[in-house]
Length: 377
Image (cartoon, rainbow, N blue to C red; front, side, top):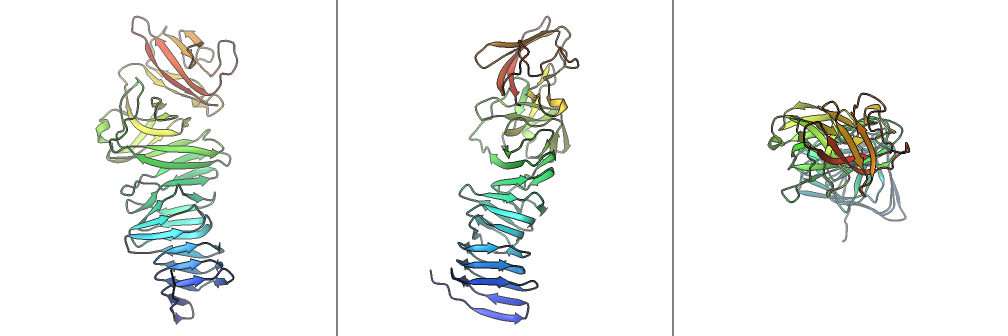
């Protein structure tokens, strides 16, 4: 491909170009207060230092070195598709506007701010949109979000502006501690997958599930807020967040959650910290015994033991490992009393390893209840 460079200097601070090519031995610097606007392709095979502003209306191909400095860059194509191959380097301030699809072919890092005005950021080739710990996200809507994986690091509350290309489905992690790095994505079911459920659930989402995966650190002490969009099929009732380690193990109830808005357009926040990487929405069965299946003995206080709601007095609770060996049993289980509840220790008093376990609950004068239990340290 031969690129021809046409430059129009409109003012001392604005330069318009049809196309722009930087050779591998060249260095171009955009100074503070200066705007370089390129209508078609910009190919950088050399060094581009940005302390001003770049406005890109066409293909961006960076095979050289891009130094983000104090500069801003805007992708504003109004065409159906804009190709962005940034060679796994960083932007300081990144603005997405115009319309259509902005295809990112490699990982990018946003150091300061992502401003979502209009346009879908489609992450291809398993690429990710990565935010530094101090980076912020402004905007976000059905017309402007990331269709792909988003990775965020740092403590506090972090927003992950993901969606499916048509719906904005933001995930928020609250009260992150330490300096974890978390990757989030959303997968639409589209009728091709039915999520497996545990016996304590009456219905589970047929719309989507979320992957919330620590790349480093953990979600200890953190809660999660998931979007609720088009989940009317769940019906009225106790809507909860459920979790699983994979798509073959049943999704189990993470615990009490607070729903705001509606099942058509709302959000739901967990009380407990997720201990598995796959999350979805479900309606819990509250007509009888309700088991909260997530246990993290070394984590947040409310996660440290097995909680069972509506448990009749005198019930026997037994827990087995995946080989069927009994590792815990309590006559008269009481989750309000330490020593009468399961806190991640076996019959020998030693810590049980992380993994999936099975429980059996035997209420007096009633049929036993069985299900899965997730233990994470």
